[in-house]
Picture 1: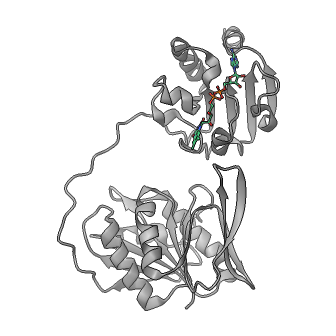
Picture 2: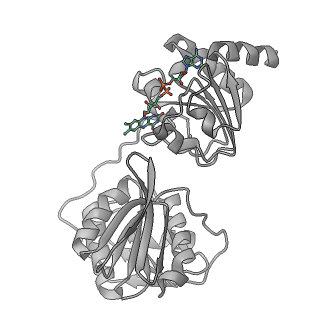
Picture 3: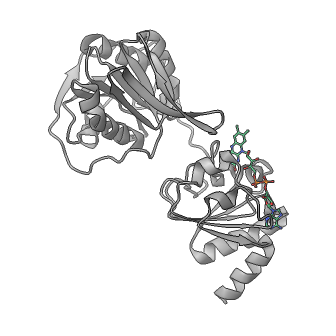
Length: 318
Ligand SMILES: Cc1cc2nc3c(=O)[nH]c(=O)nc-3n(C[C@H](O)[C@H](O)[C@H](O)COP(=O)(O)OP(=O)(O)OC[C@H]3O[C@@H](n4cnc5c(N)ncnc54)[C@H](O)[C@@H]3O)c2cc1C
């Protein structure tokens, strides 16, 4: 057994960013894990995704023509199992996405492999493969090992590895088709469009329970617009219906993966919120409680009432 197999993911005809990131992760770990880096892409037209996956360091891209254009957990499982039976990889990488999580655990059971999800680092040493993930609602980071497992399946956290923009020289090989299952994909229902993409925003003005009242939301939303920021929020703000869920930053919201400047207004800084933003280069926190945990990650702390802060900002903008 040797090498890494990346399972590519695509939706609505577009290759998922996480797949390119997973390829980058595989290439980075290639020397430690050993063996070739292969990518498998499944669908009715798998060849259309080959260019996006062909990064330097990839040895082979296997196309499996099967099913329709949309993800299908059972079909993918069957196809990846067939590919794995032939190439015998040591490590199988899947994106930590809704589709990836529908596939990876079943794959791990099928392969009798070790398994870890939401992994943000991995490698291998004399004791074998290890994976890094967080636990206990993000309160600790842990390193996992998979003793006596000849193969390991990992789902990788998004926006953790940077894909190469260069084109590689992978061989492209059509893998024998997998039988089409006796059911078909009927319809793809898009989630309601919110126009907000916390993951891509570079400047986020985020509000928490400390803005006091739902009636104050339009004021902060207007301020965010005026300073060119995307409006973010903590979970209670979304759970109370003050803002749609798409604005939520954190563990069960979105990670502000591209953000350079984050204003946290009336947000306490619970670990689940920090999960989505503590990595941001410049964090400005506004809170009436000087001991609020958010100040531990802030570059600039303002001990102030959120509405007084809004007043001051409006005065400055005038
Ligand atoms: C499994 C799980 C997943 C979770 N996922 C998320 C997640 O994705 N995102 C998330 O945000 N949370 C998440 N949470 C919830 C999280 O634990 C906190 O409860 C939440 O982040 C608190 O939101 P908050 O800071 O707005 O409210 P609070 O904790 O109530 O804090 C309000 C803050 O505002 C300050 N304040 C009060 N009045 C004012 C004022 N007038 N002016 C200025 N400041 C003021 C207070 O001092 C306080 O620090 C999750 C929890 C669990 C268990």
